[in-house]
Amino acid sequence: MNLNINKILDMQKEISGKVFNLSDLTREKTAIILVDMVNGFVHEGMLSSPRVVEIIDDLVELNEKTYGYKKIFFLDEHEENSVEFKNYAKHCIKGTREAELIPALSTSAATIHSNTTMIAKNSTNGFHAPEFKVWLDNNEETIETYIIVGCEVDICVSHFATTLKTYFNQKNLNRRIIVPVDCVETFDFGTHHGDFMKIISLWEMQSNGIEVIDHII
Image (cartoon, rainbow, N blue to C red; front, side, top):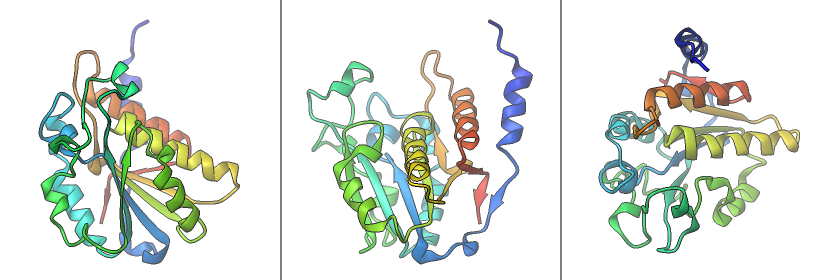
């Protein structure tokens, strides 16, 4: 089967060109979800990627401008015998630097806030973390918009965003899920081509009702 590059470019056009104004949202009804911005996916370790380093400035900017918003920081964290290591190289072992939030975010007053919840997760999909289930039970009636950022866009971000969207669909709740392109990334490794996988995953999320935008102003 031959891949048609024009089809890929068409998909990229479909997900491009939209900018969103944060002031259009109500702070008390909005949550920011930052996925896996830990050292093990950014600065060190077998799964770290220079591509993810490139979104740090945009993430810091978004984190600062949403000071006081309800936020979740998902932190990938595993025991030595994690079954996930059958599919991915060993990473983010509990108690190591790899499992810690990157310094650019961890030292910010916008992160160290009473509305911030830190949730460790043992799978690619933070939705299944027990602490998130508790948070969702306490907030799903009031939070109407979820802005999801971080890495990896085609794995952890996509899994969480799609599960969250389908969860609300099942309950017939109209909730907005927003993913800014400049605040999500993935990695290059072997046949896993970062640019290609980013386009595919963003297009797929958009086709499932998730709002894909270029940037939040």
